[in-house]
Image (cartoon, rainbow, N blue to C red):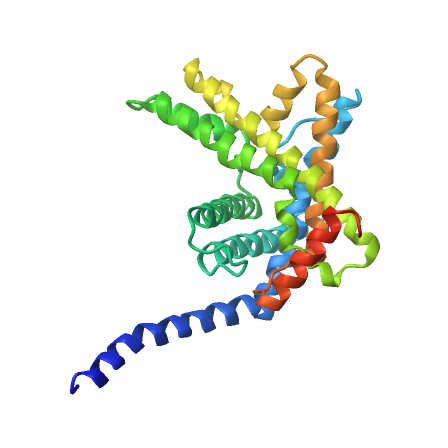
Length: 313
């Protein structure tokens, strides 16, 4: 009996620490700077897909265009009038989206939890954050007046590095498989099934926005998943043929699509999908939930999602 108070104190300490950690996570995700950076990050992410989509669509229509990766889009922005000023805005958005990715991965404001599926989603958010941090470095290089490499060149450099190592071809093939499964198939399933819908702020939307949010999200996410799967195929092809020049980013993936039978039609479809995804991402600054959701909020969101899926909204 004498040891009971001490035992209660010891067992209570982890609980208090967990509560404090939970309060910190909530305060951090609810803070105005994080909210602003996350939403501005969605806008910049949208531009990094919208610009390549428009240029690829022009190419598919037989007009002067090119295929770009998001990293190369940053260089295009730098070449515009007031390019450095625009780069500063892009830099803020990239930092914001990277922070938001790390926030979703570590603090879990979307409530993905600790199940294998939830951990997988959170790892994906962390990986996305690292990718956008690499875009931050590219932007800083351009602001410093240095040449920045990204997209196809970066992918080929990594492929060349791995192919010089023991079992490097196998590692490169695993990278490609990861792109196909975690980037391609996962995105296609999420878009096709509407898995993203539970993270939208239905209560903030006007009736007409519901229809657009669902359709744009599904089309755009599926299109991005297809492009990611092609990127994975390129890495596997690079490993099989022991040729680093077969690897590539989104720009090379779009070219690979254009090389197929009915290539211009397929390229046009992929480009339109990327344009839709870019617009959807920009509108996510308004549509996407960036706050921790309580039980009642989740209930309302689930109800809205069911109504959308059954055509009542």
